[in-house]
Image (tube, rainbow, N blue to C red):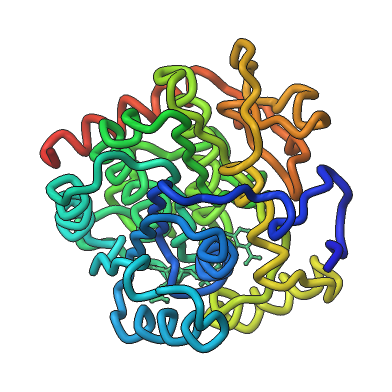
Length: 329
Ligand SMILES: NC(=O)c1ccc[n+]([C@@H]2O[C@H](COP(=O)([O-])OP(=O)(O)OC[C@H]3O[C@@H](n4cnc5c(N)ncnc54)[C@H](OP(=O)(O)O)[C@@H]3O)[C@@H](O)[C@H]2O)c1
């Protein structure tokens, strides 16, 4: 089915994703929304394993059942592996990563960070971080830190993090490092949930760009999926939902369509030249993925702001995050 919005790369997942046998995939948030849609497409290409993090094992079972009913020829039970994990509790993230590291899995080829909360009420994660930053950024940073050695064993390792074009609404200064151990709502007069969501999504963009600068052997990009009416939307407050619906002018994509940008980023050929400044260069016009870039659907170099290509801010985020995660090895 053609995409309803944008233009970009001519990418039809069933046609363009190659056979994935021998590939090991890791997906956060695979029990719902865009992460689940990505798995439903990827599994048709017969990967050797897909690790799925889930805080609700019954939703994982629903995923397995759905695949078995829709594709009886696919051995969903032997491909999908459940990792119980709450992204708002870094000890469970560490333990999920350890399960992979101590398994017989020799390498990890694709990491898809889709799990996320949006427009959440003020709260702290179990580790005491502002809830959207802790869930959307810190958990993925810890997974990547712990799984990096396994990714580096792949001949073509890919990381994609779901960001959002809404990162543009981030607080002045980008990331409010000094108060990340609070709920941060006092920093804003209005729209705190939006600003804090944007802060976490700016972190996703900057973190991928900095990862690319530090580890050129692992390709990391961030993607905006487009506007997709998923459970995440259903769970936000009614005013935020009204604004979101108005912003998208009711032209929501399906989860399958919304997953395409990420699927392109982890399966299309990689640009082998020097890593650019995170602006995607023009290589995606040739269908190539540029390490460190941010993409809008599908494969379109995303609209940046000064903050989202700010190398100093990216380095500060990386160093701040590393320090915070020191105790998790
Ligand atoms: N939908 C959009 O229009 C849109 C636009 C821009 C960016 N994005 C980004 O795309 C990503 C996916 O969004 P979505 O629309 O698919 O959201 P969704 O339907 O709400 O799904 C989010 C997934 O994340 C999981 N999750 C949330 N908090 C978790 C936690 N603490 N521990 C473990 N798992 C957790 C959920 O688990 P459960 O299944 O247990 O609930 C669910 O599987 C997010 O990062 C979002 O910011 C979405």
